[in-house]
Length: 457
Image 1 (spheres, helix red, strand yellow):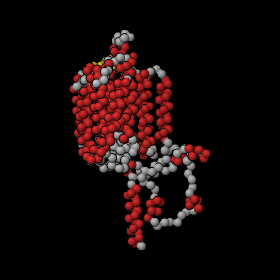
Image 2: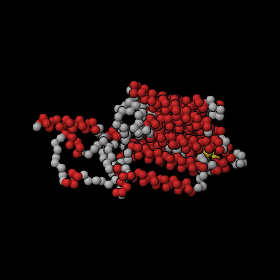
Image 3: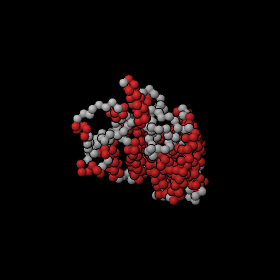
Image 4: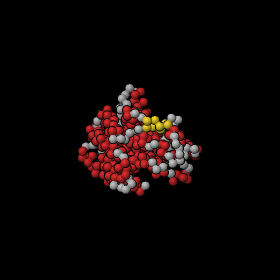
């Protein structure tokens, strides 16, 4: 565990220290695209954060290769080299996309090639444990197609959810922590050496996300871009592939005399749920991916056509603030990831199901907060945020309607805000993000109107 934690800290430190210089490089290189209609941020923000994350990954792999126990992973398995090869390819394509905006089909082809490179070097699903059947060996073509499909789906799921500051990095970090605990339990608790590469990949992924998050939290100073989102998606998929198709379930019970493979599979069905269905670890990004494809296809658009209908956009439209939307997505990721982890440890306990159900109900209440904002009693108003306090009537409103003003600023003050500001009720008063007019544009428009009225006068 000490070596895994050391690798994680080295990866996080290198990523964190390099993100600042990478931000300056991105500004100089012009990797600051104009704000699009679907964007939430209001100012052009540099991308290319994936550069720092990739070098953090390289530093972590280099450090792990020189450690006593983790060094054996590089001797006994070729999977770390396969991961580095695929990550380097997808990272280069991501950097080019952050700078030049590549076509979606080009990126899809690059994702498939990166997955194929990993398959050629041994990182592939070789068999699947199927309950009721036993071990199902896959042919070379089946193994390649299944591995490529899993990599492509995971990469795009993470890429689609990368729409708010700190959202993708935080959600993947939470999922990677749960996956690390699961893989470490197999490696240390059952002595399954084949789970060591997946444990290493999860530790590296946690370090990459932790090192980048301080720079990416709202308001973000830099975005990871496709160079970062596709990279962490590939690392997450590599860990799932490594432990899904490389670990033999029968080895978990070889000492107890399980004997037959079918019996071992039946005994470890709860354990292999997150392996057979690795997308449960990233259930929210996967759901967002499916909904996006269905929504765009229904409209007659390309599945790769960008829009503003993702889950995080809908949270903003409901009335949640940027930070609260991110925290709600974090909350559901914790419930799903660690709920699946707990179920894999002890599937017979009903407490796990009850806790997940209660937490889901709490999350549902959080979703409805902007619609049903509670009011605190008078004596408690000084201890709660302003949005939970009762409205106070202004003296001018109580005395009667005010005389109309001809000042240019009066008309602007009388108009409802369109910058997405929040009212005392906690509900957004206007559109969010880049769909709202900036305050500077409003002031300029109001000033021009006032000048024209004075000329006519």
